[in-house]
Image 1: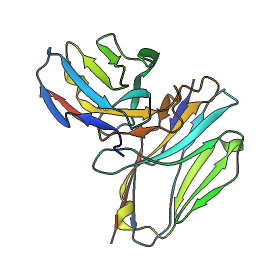
Image 2: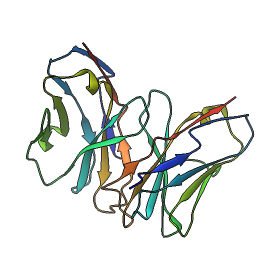
Image 3: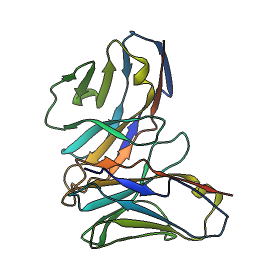
Image 4: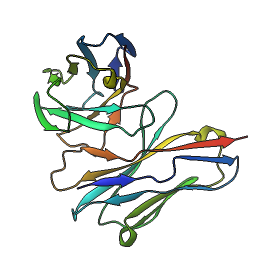
Length: 113
Length: 116
């Protein structure tokens, strides 16, 4: 039974570019949440997708957008990258629009240069 | 507003010592959930425990134990007889219970180094 998988594992982008990160939830899970973790900090909630809709959003600008597909996988898109967007991006999956049994992936390490 | 504070940034102990990681939270909700996660160098957050606000019973799981005290808004985590494999960053987190969307609010984390 595969857990939460994220791709790619590492990514280097140039300031101003756009990036797409991908997440496949744990088998049987239908809810995906995205978190940004800057170096030495705790993860910060970006948004959550359930039933292909953004259900809740954290304090992130509109440059951060997402999508959930019918198979429950999800993408996180970041436009106009800033140096400050460099972080570990974590995906968490859960069931039924709730997050009490959230399983996390290993994350995508994004470096903006 | 909701907030989680982990005042200990780094803790270093020698193997077999007991160690307690502190967590203090702030919330106006009457229903909420508290969590502890472990983050090894690989980056994945590993779930350790979840408690709801109505259950103040302490819990023990092997070498791990948790002390939840609503009176002091604390949810501390103790590792007994620490091992090198316990070295990691540990996060305490809070989730609102009423809306139950599962948005987790994390503390800054405590880096635990267990030396042989």
